[in-house]
Length: 101
Image (cartoon, rainbow, N blue to C red):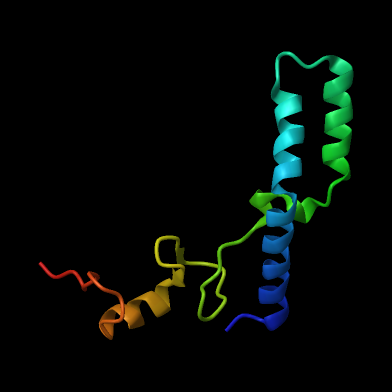
């Protein structure tokens, strides 16, 4: 089980990313646009740099939905490898079976 503080920090980041998504998208569009002047680009880049770093989606970490474990998390299920295996063995995930050949 991960520390509660780490899990809460990740939730806080997720909310911040959702809140600032549109603003970041607009500023990045200005920076990438070939029609923007150098002054516009510099201004947009400065505004982007002033935004909180945790608002960037790349700062998010995928964590297990049950335990909060940060490593070995399967995106498709949102579970860590240990909990995914347990859920599969208990038949809680439809269509997922243990491989045997």
